[in-house]
Amino acid sequence: MTSLYDNIIFGPIRSRRLGLSLGVNLLPIESKLCSFDCIYCECGWNDEHPGKRRFNAREDVRDMLDATLQKMVADGTPPDVITFAGNGEPTMHPDFENIIADTIALRDKHCPKAKVSVLSNATQIHREDVRRALLRVDNNILKLDSAFDDTVQLVNKPQGAYTVARTVELLKAFEGNLILQTMFLRGEYLGKRVDNTTEEEVTAWLKLVDEIRPKQVMVYSLDRDTPCQTLEKVEKDELRQIATRVEALGIPCSVA
Image (cartoon, rainbow, N blue to C red; front, side):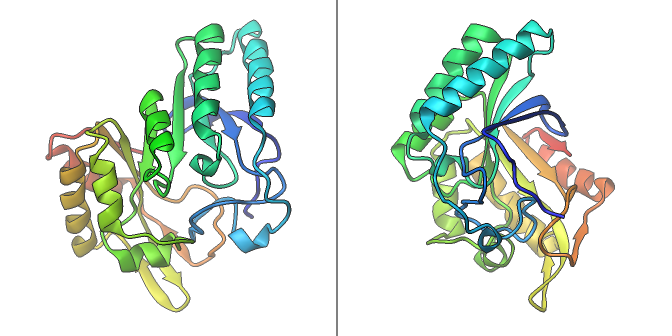
């Protein structure tokens, strides 16, 4: 069963990829707000959660994060990472850049060893303010699930104009200062076969990885409930084979 995050600050949780992670949700608490409508999203479909579509205020995020970090440090359990995720796409927040500045200041004050991470679908990186903010964090983790527009339309269901070619050009502009993240999965959706693990898919994706030259790649598969019930998890051994092909390009690749 898919579910929403019910507060601005959530966790901490033990992340497969990031360690002890304190989550920050800039999106509405009672609804989902995203520029994708991924068939594998743990928050469910966009139209399942029509509720109030208000972003959380910068001041509320700062005050709650400040209080939570103070408590975690006092308890002797500071987070390894502060992660922007939540009920949709965090970089859609109109005050995203200032919130990142607040977060870095609070991190430096309370737990300077913690990393700041952003999990993003890369749909807002055409905005200068978003790019500036992402270049300030320790881990800007940007999504690219396929080299083919047809697959992206089927799997990620962009809610606005989106092309792989344009996204890749914007990712290349980070000059390697990003982590590229890809979900691999199989199954069916709307009577169509879903599979971005085929040789055609992986070969084309690897070509784009080589063009983007991120500092790291993360490959992963299903781990939580999805709104589409006909999807299949890709096993670790197969993910490791893909990771080996990434590492042959001279780019570190982790499997989660």
